[in-house]
Length: 314
Image 1 (cartoon, rainbow, N blue to C red):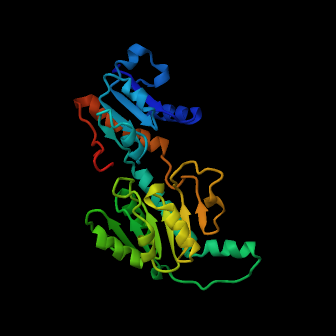
Image 2: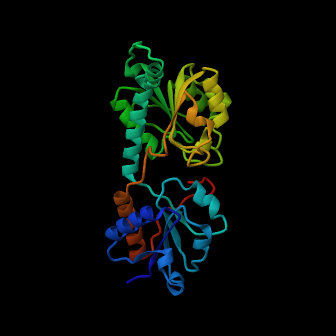
Image 3: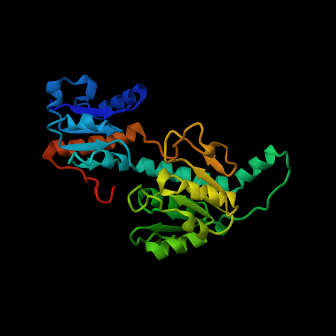
């Protein structure tokens, strides 16, 4: 049997056990163990670490480590934590995650499009007030990020009849989607987006991307969905825009600090719907199969999967 593979996480015991079971089912010919289950001698032989929010010190203690397979699509924290460990980091690219995210984008777009926040407010005020219906094609959904997640979301939104526009760092073309890129392109997207959906990875360039000036470019009464990372949107600027009545509502699944502290004023804000980072959870089964494929190719001929570009952060 080849060298053991170390599963390195700081997840709750139940979650870690679930990953261990799924990975073992996907790779019956491999020995996969949590780091604590490996002896010092076995740790010295580990070439591959499968990780989810690992302790950086644990990885630095693996002298023969060749590469790191993340169980998450977002790797910004991993890249930041491992600046002193020069090993390839492979992010999880799972088509199931794109499907799940597209599903969530469509669901919460409908939530805003069909005025659910307004009806919730009316219910609390005991008001019976039907609002005027608008057609989906009269609503433009702007996607900030046209990677795998954004592309899948654009397809689902188009199928539902929405007018769809998207922005990416570099120019892209998608059928039926008005695509923009660059600084001027972002301004053009914002100016037409009735619902803005953030799906970009967190990098040095996207941190604080949606700030007061850019929120002001959205049409009055627009709404925002952040399914990217908390710091992509400047929280205080978002709250100020909501308080001023420029934006109508925000659906937030990600935050600067997670879990969101119980004393955060965001919980009670009438213009914010809070979700506990559930827009696109990783599927243990499909993710384990993808990891298994990456490891099988490495075992066969030493081929490393495509690694994260540390300068870009993804």
